[in-house]
Length: 410
Image (cartoon, rainbow, N blue to C red; front, side, top):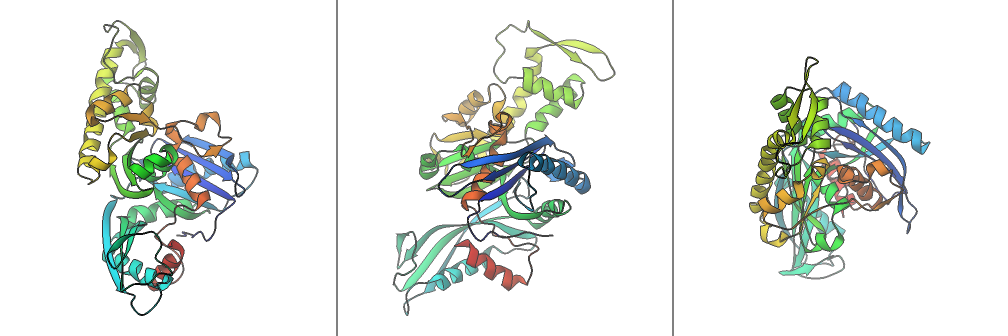
């Protein structure tokens, strides 16, 4: 299992969104000071993945391989490493506190490494890995408005660091799946975090914003304040559950159910009096006419359930007030007609559908919110905003890996 680290800002990046319903790969390049340009793109329906979990590692690996090859062919180059996303793993957020005595010397990188090492040990649990490590603030002798304490003096240096931990098994399986394609993993990012970088404006991220990523097998939540990630959460329910509801409710195949959802589905109340009908092919070769009202009546309860669960998670996140009316929807579920309006009612906030930004020369098919995670992975990768906290599979023991992480993370 190979997970590489990034040392400097890169001129190119390959980002792979491994989703329940689709996989997509973007190969991008940039010159310092210029726009990030897409030079390769590939996507296909996911195989070997269910509700965000890998259920057939070889089938999923073959799907990854073909998706990456399509992007490579378009870019006319071969890649060796990928920035990837994680949608499962039961992410858990915890803010860790630590303090060190700095009275005898100027504050240096070594003091910051000591703080980070202490908070990392606090978050270390059997079966879990630290995926994200975000410094929220430093304080010198109680003064908490310090952005970078290096070179300063005081008695005590303290910090608050957010650690996002995930189940090690889910993370290792994901990395192993990519390694089976003879590719290395450069970084792993929670899907909703990547989507937030793609869809939220900088002022939103500074003031406080919640990004709700409505994916196929999962629904992710990322909260950002002061341009930093402060909270993430994942619900094991998404758009594919709506598809299965339609298939079961109408007796149709999954492909037909997906088409009914995306082409004819809506969450808004039917305004046609139930008179408009759709010709639907049933399993077994027969067909029947169904009304839009019947179809929408199957879709609406599941989306209500998802948004109500998200509302509850926001309220218990600790950032309910800070978020205010800044809520952004991403993911394929955001395209379902009426989702925005239902979200505004259930969340009791203003909501907008996020249009990903940050990349130039995007193929037209990859410009919508369904590709927010992929675009966010590419933006994060090229701008070195994100650095992986975990070093699974790297050479050396725990202390060597921790030392490497500390040197690279600040």
